[in-house]
Image (cartoon, rainbow, N blue to C red; front, side, top):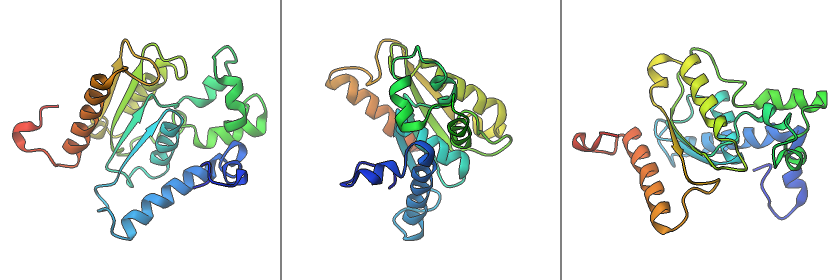
Length: 208
């Protein structure tokens, strides 16, 4: 998939900067391939994205909201344009190489084509989503997931938006809670969310 590491540096360059849309389109193509080849039922496809990977998944959802049944966005980078316009944030300048500098018009226009926060479809049914944020995250502001969820609930189908959950960790950082117990609890919560959305829980187990 364009934007990945691979063995050739050009593979990554073809999915970054002004070519970032290539990585999103490749991700969508991978999802369609899994369905078309029978690896997953068309109503059972899920996606998980962490940090910048959350941007990838959220952008794909904006472009093809009916492709996914559920998505988990962990400390996702969603309000990309506003974040990259603030050089005081710790990773802004470093992210210019990956996403572009929105102070340059051509870069700004490119970013605005896929920015998850800026491209939410009004009145459209979105998949169930679990978003996580961490109050002490120094890489992705806790406000990014909060702003995104607020806009999803405001603009998308009113019945579907109730299936969008924001879970905020008030003590952890970008990588969540430390230690094996904290990681296991986080993973169990995510599995429970996916199992409920996919209809894999008994009626007695569905209080989420």
